[in-house]
Image (cartoon, rainbow, N blue to C red):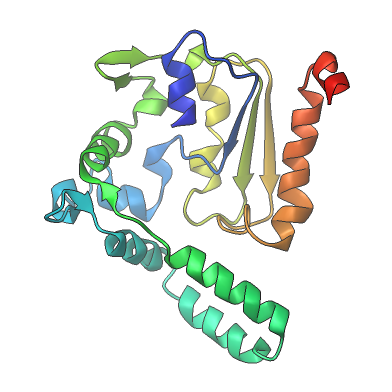
Length: 213
């Protein structure tokens, strides 16, 4: 949404853009593409319930299908380390976060499938918002692309093409050795992801602003 918002307007008061595990090539999203892409057999309306939304349970089940052994592996590890109070606290927090899905607006889901999964509009530079064309090449501010090398949700093949889509001459790519969740959660993220972001922000902050801080 940030990527498209910046491309939609000529004047946006943003000094830089950080894309973290952001899908750009929607034809390289694995099972998501197989189900929802041009050759996919699923009609978006099939997932929308009587409230007009995609229910939270549908989103949760879809992610479980992507990596069906995750729950079993997590349970085994939990049994091995259930005497470690710090681990149990982290396990409970992570478990709650991964289960905390909310309903997804049905109209937005239909538009997402049609525009991104079926037409791959970001890659083809044919995004239309409110009937107005959006040009990704308008994005000329510095861009940091953060991608996870073990990401099973947004693989490198989907995230890295952002470098070719935007119009910026200052594009930096950070490939980190994590999965999708590990990129932003846990000790590894604190030790590597956040410092990577802070370093980039510092290097792209005007000297006058640094002096004020």
